[in-house]
Length: 141
Image (cartoon, rainbow, N blue to C red; front, side, top):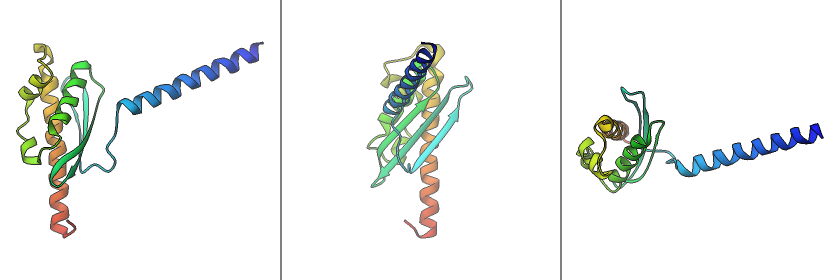
């Protein structure tokens, strides 16, 4: 009976772990071979990541991740949503205030979440532009 309980416990833990991984990857879609990506750590310690895929010089896909609070999650998701369909130059006009408005406002002590999302978005665009410029200089684009 003791061995059966142990095996059953291990089986239950394995199912929980697999379910957690499945839900995690389902809720956090990733862009395969992103054209621009960035990972920025805010002064609060939150980490945000954004990956962008461009088609015809406009964002066609995007994914985001953060280890921060719900406000950080909402802001980084809104930043990626706002970037879809825009050119790199248009994305640079997206700032913390626009992101705050997109999420319906933020408490004053969480305004930095929108700023961090904008900073991460701009860093991903900067990465895209540097990579794109490098390929153009090499004659590969």
